[in-house]
Amino acid sequence: MSVGEEIRAESGKPQQSLGTSAARNLATTTKSAPQMQEISSRWLLRMLPWVQVQGGTYRVNRRLSYAVGDGRVTFVKTGDQVRVIPAELGELPLLRDFDDQEVLGELASRCQQREYAAGEVLTSFGSPSGEVFLLAHGRVEKVGTGPYGDDTVLGTLADGSYFGEQALLDQEAIWEYTARAVTACTVLVLPRQDLEQVAERSETLRGHLQRLRSIPAQRTNKYGEAPIDLSAGHVGEAVLPGTFVDYETAPREYELSVAQTVLRIHSRVADLYNQPMNQTEQQLRLTVEALKERQEHELINNREFGLLNNCEYDQRIQPHEGVPGPDDFDELLSRRRGSKLFLAHPRAIAAFGRELNKRGLVPETIDVAGNRIPTWRGVPVFPCNKIPVTEAGTTSIICMRTGEEEQGVIGLRQSGIPDEIEPSLSVRFMGISEQAIISYLVSTYYSAAVLVPDALGVLENVEIGRWG
Image 1 (tube, helix red, strand yellow):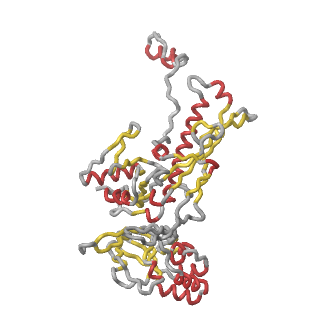
Image 2: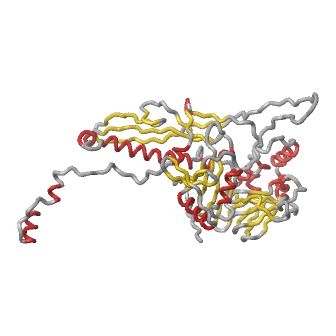
């Protein structure tokens, strides 16, 4: 029995007009182009100044700086026991370039684990300093005395930081600040006497320490750069100093990275199913969108050139109260001149908005390409869902100065490549297989460079799940 006969049987009346199911066979439906949830605003790609790179490599020449060993220390946790990876002790200025793994292993084994509750004092201002503290987990405030005798927070330290390293060389060292736990903290402590005991038995460590004590301190400016001698305010025929600007002898080079895929389309689909939309064009459009999403992800997270991994540790700060507040944004801005933009996960922007609401503050907005973007102190705060959010509900907020002329952060690409459809993005025909499948190689080339360290800052360990 046909559908029409079923309808007549159920109603008892003959069908008087054509049914919709039959009519669709003759009608041309109104349809959308293929949709894709992965597409985001990609503000980083839109706002980053792009520099043309010939030869696929960009070299960042800088004025000579002296390394001071200001990296982060990595730990291994087994149950409730924490130990430092021996090689990571090389991040301490004292042990920079010291590579005797056996000695580093013994020093790591002598690190004593201590637990501190929130509010407890780890060190007191003015007391003798005879230990270096390695912060495995938690947040610690460095508290000093302000000009009027009140306490002032000099800085906040978090996982992987260390302090008190000067005590390992200087027996007369004292604590110049009070270290107080903001949260529950797990630290490893290496006493100076343990270092000296190991040095008595190790000729390599003993020689390393003697060499450090004999080398005169390098003259540097506050940025660690070799100084330029100048004279000002003199009168008469004073003898002017001679000087020159020294450069790094091994500057960093950034090679363009690549994101690629092979797009495959059956010739039967490309030949027969191209009305009203071209199947090849739609397949290519969605593939390019996915490549651009991956490109932005790499610019944020890549271990070699990603912004989160290339921010210097002295440009990383911790939120004072865990949640991202206006004071933290002000601290980010104060670390650099000419900040052009913030990048934050949408949930971090929402958390920042809640803090503004608590204080009765309403951020100004500006129009960027037809979008209303919130600002702080006139600097736009752009959403970026490529910034990771941990399972613990923490994330990071990026602040940067951009542009080659401003010694900021720049994007790198090479235009003019073969079969280019957009700058530094190409689609190359690879042929047709014996199965009649057409293949296209889709490639995009890119990287990012931080020209000077203070061009990029990160607010780390931002809590985005706290309400009320």
